[in-house]
Length: 185
Image (cartoon, rainbow, N blue to C red; front, top):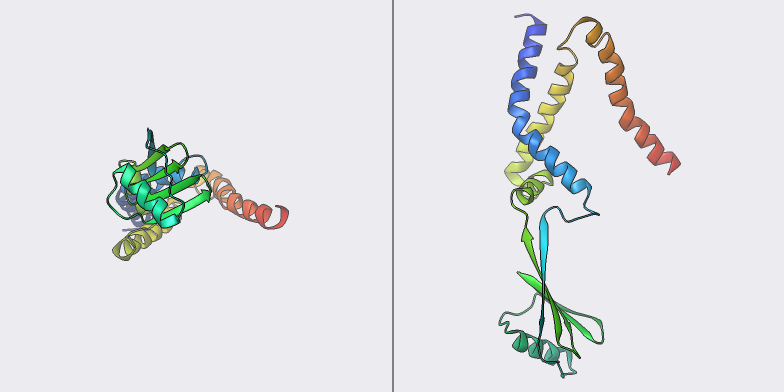
């Protein structure tokens, strides 16, 4: 088998193996790139309710009275008073923001986005351990795909023709951004 045939077989077979992970990383990449605009892993359901105003003045008593009036038996993971009239209680399954004088309550319950949550966990390597090995093998596979892909075609459409210009542009883009970011921003 000559080198070009071997190159094309490697490129094709590694490409087929990489399809699933490429879709996961591509979809998740677009999602996490826009984290300033939305939470790509969770949606937050907000509901409102009203309880009787909270009259206690001691922090521990305020928290106890709020939990009692909300009907919450579990201890909060954290409690915060962003201002004298507000109490925020943080629980595993949601958060409560209580206006103490009026009893107005905003309940925020995060829900993971089906499929996208899992894709983002893989993309950001949250699982660690075995997933790190899989992600590293995938990254090496992408490097092999990039190199073998340059030699799939011959002639004026290959690496000695138009392919050289396109490869150069593809290399120049991150270099130009890096230079711009480093020196001009």
